[in-house]
Length: 287
Image (cartoon, rainbow, N blue to C red; front, side, top):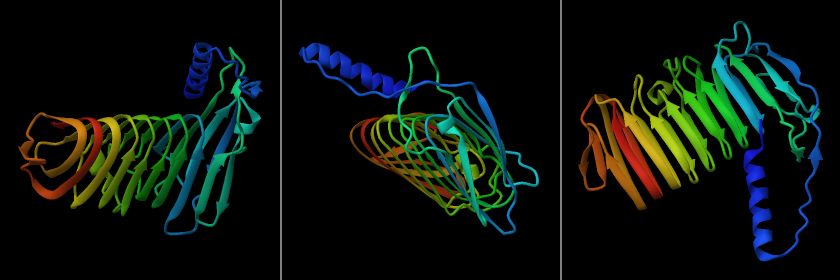
């Protein structure tokens, strides 16, 4: 795993310094990575009707999926720096897994790669899931998990999030707040939420609302300079209310336009999407 965003910033600072003819000493902590270490993670299923799971993850790779049998969480962490060893805290039905040294800073020496990966499986108990992350790569398969709520906040991220199967319980709210990222969210109708809020900075975002829409749902999207792709099945009862500054709209498929309103004439529960896009492009698709 490389700290690409941080290295890019350092390179830009160096180039700017050379252009101005000014010498600036940038204090950088150099760290030496060690051998790869592995830590098993196991959290037993609490004696409760639901659980709250908080994942605090910095830079690296985070993989989530269902599959924990007779447990709340099972998995493995792989890292090559002692400060990155995860800490598991359990307080009744509340579980927090976090990077051990939250104040850790520094970059590896040239030629050394920092390794940090969590591969976690979640169990069948209803869960309120919160993910707090930095600049990282994420692969989340959440299909079939009993998620009562989902709250994700991250920085410069590259994330694939999928609901390949319906959520067996009703999700009260789904919140995703991100920085300058590349996100692919698919099978969102299977999340079974009543409300979803998506906020982002500059980036490339694809929100695919395929799946089984079992009740009315409202989605609020706020973004800056971005490319946003919205996709729904052509038989979905959907409407988009759009407002934007310098953004362009590309309409493909079964979407019908009336001013700033776009609809798909479908049947069943209604999907309402409100979009506020500062600049960039909005692309509407049907499958």
